[in-house]
Picture: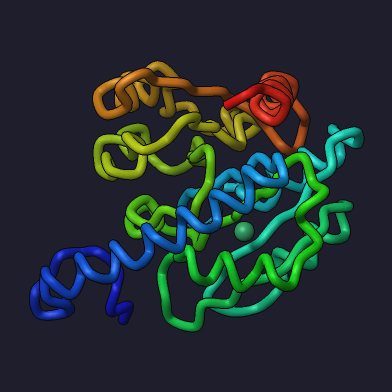
Length: 229
Ligand code: MG
């Protein structure tokens, strides 16, 4: 069990201790942010459930944006599989294996940066551990939060995990190539659920498999990477 997951359960961690952990993380996140600013790197915290298509999204991004220099840290409890997939797609990638922790924190990211050639990248993806709760609570120093939500996850997922979706700058509705096989799933119901928790809903629907919708995502990425933000 994670002892710093932010669930607020006093049996797991006291509130004062939890606040101290978060405040130490904030300082480390600010340190990371200054590194990213110094090198002009757009750092994006990519979050979503396990199986929401985060890694596939990044692979497809690399394939379709050969002019963007991409680096990635990829978090999972175990294995380096995702970092290996990203490296095969042409992204400079490093795995962060968290053991039992259900999220990345700013210290893990800083340690990962020490072992990755990221300074010359346009964009650093920080692929968080698959989880819709704790990753939203821990600042990593990123400039933007992107949340992957697969069409198979249930139309009311944003309302069930409001902290995650409220913190998102962009939500990517993934795996839309599966929609013909999901006759009960309605896009407008997902949009309505998101609108209830995300102050200014920003949703792009795409398929990493077919490429449908990828241009809008790449446009957002280019604009964010080369904008002043
Ligand atoms: Mg992954």
